[in-house]
Image 1 (cartoon, rainbow, N blue to C red):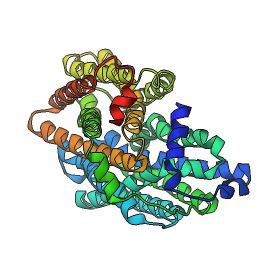
Image 2: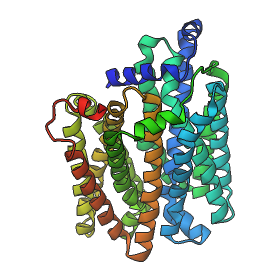
Image 3: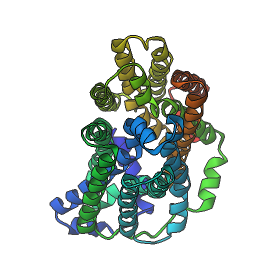
Image 4: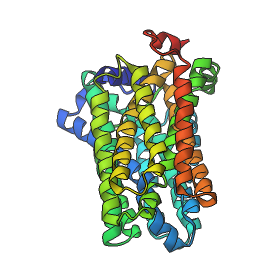
Length: 415
């Protein structure tokens, strides 16, 4: 995994072209603290993005909308982020990346405060739209920034540290938000994530060095990448897998509540989901570079089994918990697999590949949660699990279309 992360950092050198002496000029402690500040930002962004998943029933009831309509809290930032990911990089030019990251953190803080005090669902969606405006740009820049904050030989470790913010958000952030909601209210959960965003902003303001850029993504880079059939098919695969997950995961809390899980039990299940996902991410990193296609196929297959089985075992709390944990194992490993897959699909256009990856993921989150909401309101929560299973099955077919057992997958993807 570290080799891939190092390669990703090296590929992004042209995007954030800070002089080599800048990182070395800062003390090692300050350099690593600046990395931590970005990792805290990653933790705050991911926690804020998926916080409504654990709070959906309470917010829907308090703001007077159906659970399906409340799913727009996940759909809205996804749509905006899908546009902001490539849009920000196309428009940023040579603006110092430090200023951009600070501006995105301010938007994150504002989003949480607007959501926390929203008097209506419309204002809530406004707050979530502000999140989306910041989200796409943050993820396009965050990994590239890692290699500029420390010496080049430590770039992989810095990138891994920033990614750990995502992991801890899954393991701790979202379940903690659900727990705070149980003690106080869902508004208190957004206030807590706002405080976290404020900490990230303050840390970045004090610790981030200047990050000048001498290059930016051109529209022709995006067009060139999309002209490749393997890249288009890879992006379709990413969309299907993330769509399968979020068409169902957005409504997992109402599903559990519908099947007699108490709020503490739901918090425990979500915590377990994040914990096993964290373990799966660590485990898959040891084999994914050698067996990328097989690893991805196996994880999506587990996702399919979990989604297809949950409606069948809803009467057994123990069986439901086991299937949710299996789901957590699958999705804990899938993002790493897909990230490496997309790197192999765009070795000569890494920045364009990163921007399109972020964009397509956000489109899948938005369309998946929206479609799931329509299905929930029209048919029921169990039906959206079947929808997710169908999308997972379709994605397995796309993965297999690259040729299972192909030992030169990198050559196939780079065509």
